[in-house]
Amino acid sequence: MAYSEQVIDHYENPRNVGKMDAEDAHVGTGMVGAPACGDVMRLQIRVSDDGVIEDARFKTYGCGSAIASSSLVTEWVKGMTLDQASELKNSQIAEELALPPVKIHCSVLAEDAIKAAVEDYRKKQGA
Ligand code: FES
Ligand code: FES
Image 1: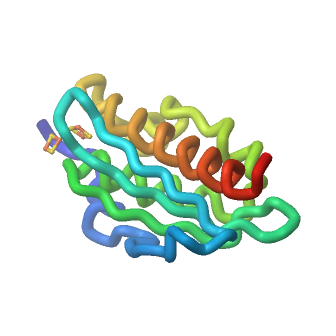
Image 2: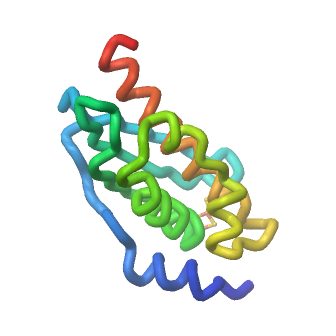
Image 3: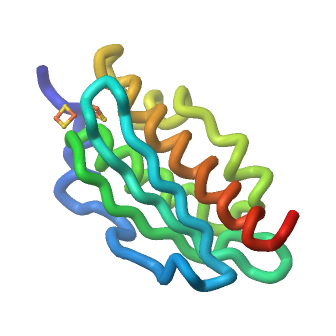
């Protein structure tokens, strides 16, 4: 099965790979796994005091589509509010990356990861 150009671009030049200090009060961490294949994704956001995502990082142990999905999401969420980020849909990711049906769960992983990161941040704030 061939990867789309968009997937190859993110796979070869992943944006925002890295790690933030998970103990930092301004950082939210989402760590999720895909039951279908065992791939694991960590997505982290840094949030300003007024609830805007200033930066994002990811590390994905998985297939090219999962890496591309997480790379894309770290780009998209910068500048978003927490509400906007948690409304991201995997279908938007799958469409942007032209994922075939068998790779849809890779984009679900990225949606789950950003939602988990937002939730983690909110929990830390005591909300
Ligand atoms: Fe998920 Fe390769 S690791 S398909
Ligand atoms: Fe499982 Fe891509 S094949 S995340």
